[in-house]
Picture 1 (cartoon, rainbow, N blue to C red):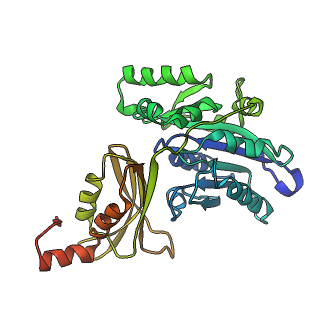
Picture 2 (cartoon, one colour):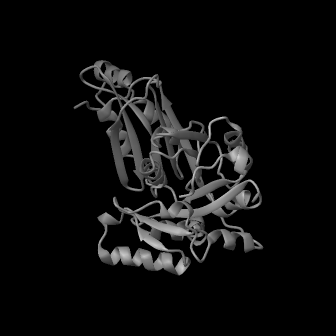
Picture 3 (cartoon, rainbow, N blue to C red):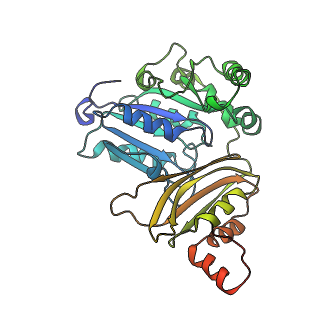
Length: 334
């Protein structure tokens, strides 16, 4: 990794762009990067769909700043927001060593990379790293052209979630990735060294391919839509499990923070991760002075935001208790 950089004196900010389709594990990679260099100060910019910022809840800051903007894909309407955020960070008194940019899972990395390449006197785009979900990549590559584009214009491709697959299946994924891109391919594991992927540009640099590109277009969003779900009241755990287990088949990605009520009267916080058919719910600590509330983002095809909102609000503890007391038991509390 590059040494300490004073932006005001050196003028160029080292940048790493993290790309990859929805649910591939980009935020997990950033958490590992930040945790691997406790003496370094990172600035992290994340892009998200929906009205409520969620990634700052998932990425652990350690020593650094997290700047998040929502309501748009980074490669489209939010590109100006991206560069404004970078300029604000560079103008702050607090200094940082490295800027990490996480593009949304539906973002085309080419226009994002160009935003930095077009200003070489200010930014040094070190590497573009693509995270590929070994479980779902072959399916999503066929359905969403942007998933293949993310691989094609990357310096490194990190294969995540390969531990749950057979060797034959993993090799099939790796062959397809190698067909798309000459970038070095690495299976991402708990001991994978990460320093290399911050600033060691390989021979077939994606930044050079982007710079030499004359024309470029890719279908990004298609029929994908999103729904933001929020509640200030605590959520009943059993009712929420029922809600998550019965999400529509068209859901591609879901994530967020859930404020649970426990039988002991205490309030708990958990991080929800939904990728295709996989569901994960991990308990975490509340941050100091953090508002106790639930905020979720659901992304998919053919989803009904109104129906999802109604079903989610029925998971509120007060609603579950009311149903039990005044009518048929629609949701059972264990």
